[in-house]
Length: 166
Image (cartoon, rainbow, N blue to C red):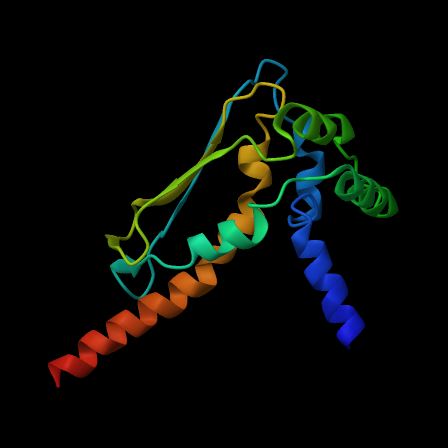
């Protein structure tokens, strides 16, 4: 069991593998003239009309504050080959060469702890480097992991309001 947990943690520590497998092929699907990308996360609604935003800082610190390395690229190349998926090795090697392995993305978000009406943007991700513009959507899987802490925080906030009323 411990080996499995360590392996899973190792996979998540590699930002190239911290995604859905189908994301590996997206770089081949964009129009040839594409040169920048902008993605966003919003709460589309549900039981509550407001969302308490929480948890993004932890995800960013845990997964994006370490640079991508050639060893990570080699690991990802083998992983995707074993799954029959294409892999943008050249794009990742470019990131290591041009940015010392740090992902050239701009992530913006509302302040942690903010209560935001649903149907409003909570997080944006953009990449303006035309060589690796696809990074903005590639990171979607990792960024969407914010939904668990957001859901817990939102439910707790609404429950607290209910308890205070009584």
